[in-house]
Length: 144
Image 1 (cartoon, rainbow, N blue to C red):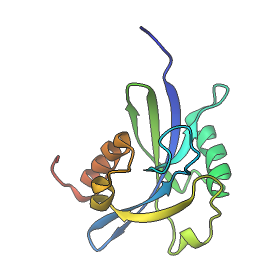
Image 2: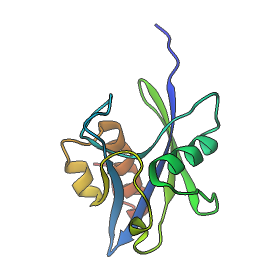
Image 3: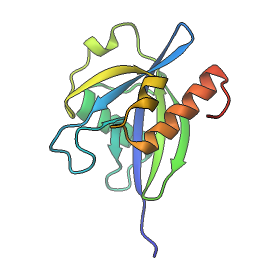
Image 4: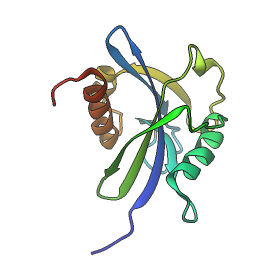
């Protein structure tokens, strides 16, 4: 059986703090069709053959009321899962950035250490793969 995979652009805000990777995750709303009340990344699916970059710009305006500047983000990786292809863009925000955004989708955002995120039981499994890779890349850690 062949089906088209959903293409998803994701912004992953992160900071390095005293040798620890921290990521800013979204708490999904209870009325979400998929994985309500879970934590996950910021972003969403491409519409009408959008490029990953254009999709990221649109989604961040919708979800965080944020205008993406591509000199402030770095493409990290492309992940292909069973039903989706995720394009991950990294963003190192300035200090107290979370106080300057307006959450437009989801309940709220929260900083987690990479380990705290990996330990969550209400966190999207595919996103755990990305967090593990990010931590290994930034801290040169071995595979867990």
